[in-house]
Length: 341
Ligand code: NDP
Image (cartoon, rainbow, N blue to C red; front, side, top):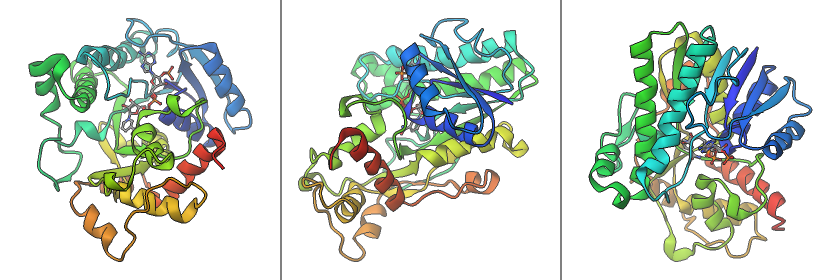
């Protein structure tokens, strides 16, 4: 069968496309330029399934996906801006919300017989960023704070709230479509926490790295963050390959219908990243040393929220990779890309 992957040139979406292709699905990816499309054609030339691309320059435009959805059997909607540095909240809301509504309407108008749409939401629609940590979250929770902060403060709202509100509003619009329209196809949402892992998409310099790796891995690899920035606690991580597998499995698992799925491995800190980098990449000279004394890891990570991914492990059969593999494989890809050795 043929799956449409929106924003296929992105960090996560390129892995989503690859995993579908490796499982034998054919994939049509939307990209913003022919050069991004050709990069992917070359990247996927030996996969089991066939890859093709179509140009969708702006997902916020009504009807943007009218042609792209024709003939597909399922859709993975991943395209959305990811940045904590937007000026106005609307700069993010336009593409996130309209992009999501547009893809749903294009399916309804042009190909209502697809089976399912899987939407890449975020853990940011689940946890309340202003609750004192540590709290345990699962798929029954909603971030009820970011949208209100943006309404109140507009451009002055914190960048994290602007981004999270863009995801909350888009996900609300996603579920509302199913309530209002009762289409014959169904929907699933995947909620990754901070996502890392090997880079396979087009990315020629550290400046064009995707947001999560740029903010939380690259600064340690490159030595921009120092000992005084550690332990940088307070997050959970997941590997991009596991996030991709969650998209593929949720497309084909009947019980996934109408469900939200957190995609999360474990809690970790910047200290864990540094300890692993020093062990695995001794030639990266400016990495802060970190604290590898017994018990340090558990002590530091105990203050972070716990994102309970038991449901995706059970229903989708995902076994999440540990932090050692994720930091090693992310960094190996950065070393190769940017010639760091
Ligand atoms: P990327 O920035 O690598 O990918 C975003 C994709 O969306 C790119 O293909 C980009 O196109 C496309 N895009 C953005 N704005 C537009 C627009 N206006 N019109 C057309 N295409 C657009 O980010 P990620 O891969 O990290 O994120 C992908 C999805 O996963 C997002 O929905 C994000 O919210 C979600 N997510 C990410 C997490 C993470 O830690 N990385 C965690 C949780 C959720 P182009 O390449 O041309 O810029």
